[in-house]
Image (cartoon, rainbow over all chains, first blue to last red):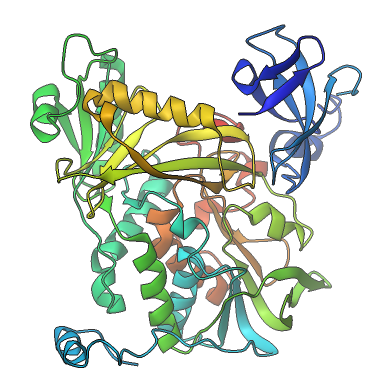
Length: 87
Length: 418
């Protein structure tokens, strides 16, 4: 069981959260062109190691947070509110 | 190397089974090969085997980071089937199933393919309509499919919960009788032995650490056992496709996720087919040893850890219990996790890449094992001819960019939802 430190609610069990994927892709400007949108929708770094990812505290405060978690060990090194992380 | 036969068994039995020769060589890597395949699992070994058998290319090395068949080939739940809706998927997987049907004889190695049937359970009228549609699509592609009613299912699998209290009552099911199970290790061992006999070098404990690309063309690989030059490099490392492709500078429409599987204590034979729960994340078959082999859904977050977490264990087994209440006192023996390449449309990639001479076979999601022979066959064709076979044209890398995705479930570009 992952223990995720919600910035608003404190440490909570993984089952309270819903995974929302890689935090890196940013929606391009409407005029950015087809290639930019293709990369945004489909391409992922998929790192083997630290990964910044979005989790939604669906069973708690219902806010999104950015979790930095190692995909090889599942160890969580940091959690932050979405807006402060700039994502 | 000796051919396996009744006579060979009898002869070796008399000698106390002390004189069996090793099944494949353990060669040192040579400095160059015509073709290097990365990954000695079912797909990589099948590719090497069919390169030698169908295309006469035997100057081939298969490089494996660990031991042969020790990745996802040894971590799946051994189901074979071709019950797909979309034409491209149906054709590729059924071609593979046909290869399975003759594989033991072809390889002179018993892969224990057992066509005991794969039964998808339906729990609502809408789901039965969906199954009728998929079954019809399968039959139009020449694949066997039967729509079963509730009584047919009850006759086949009487231990399912047919009571009035069942949370998801069983309306019927979609059955593919030609589906079933096979022996996962035997696939790797049989292919390795058959490829080796045709001159392919299988090199274990040889981790690829880099891919050499010059002027848009692949030149070879860097490994933990030295550099190896090659005209063509194909990767078959599903689970780690993004990781290895990144060594060649490619970014792919793939996320790696962990999927768990479970094995119970052995029981007397009672389950004669593969059963999948249509209303939750659970499927089960009974192995020849009597153990129940079970699986569910992804843990849902990116992972390369080859192990999952307790919430999904509980979720999967709760689904299993709602379907088979009599499993409640069953003791579990093992659980493990495997790393799955989840593509953005849920279908694999078997294709050329923008780098000349560099080919990708990956993105198998949860469905790689059954596809191994067919995937190797078309990948060998793609590498040998430098163009895809008609069966894997649709599995191109460009399909995401061009809008020709193969989204069997219609789930959209959400890797963990396929």
